[in-house]
Image (cartoon, rainbow, N blue to C red; front, side):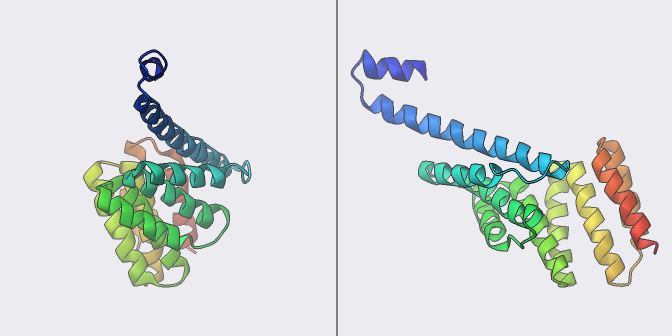
Length: 202
């Protein structure tokens, strides 16, 4: 950034200021997403809703849109949808669907896997089990291809609940989830698996 400032001030290159603004916007957008994710993690840890979380993600969307960064927009929109669903108890489906569209166009399979997962959760809550399974299974496929083992394990927990609701036996699915969570050191997912085993035995 310093060289752009010097090009503008000492070299008289006004175009360097536009480039500096673009780079700063990109840095700010990335930082907004990171700070928003930390706020979301604090909510999951039981610290309550942060008043900063949603505005951070909304600011990121605005900046990424200004930059023409499709991948960034898809990620930031996912987090808005996730906030709506997880923190506010809404479906978040509109933002999640838009996130999925942008992620697919940008070739961002990780964000697509997140959007698919949470769209699946929304369908599961609505009682649409076949569609929920389809979405979660697609998310699992993407996460396996990326080697994202904790994410696969998390999705298998959801698929275990769906399998049980459909009258099937979720034991094998939960066993695989346990192996993946253990292999990746995902203690939080292991606790979710244990809760699922306990709940589904009732």
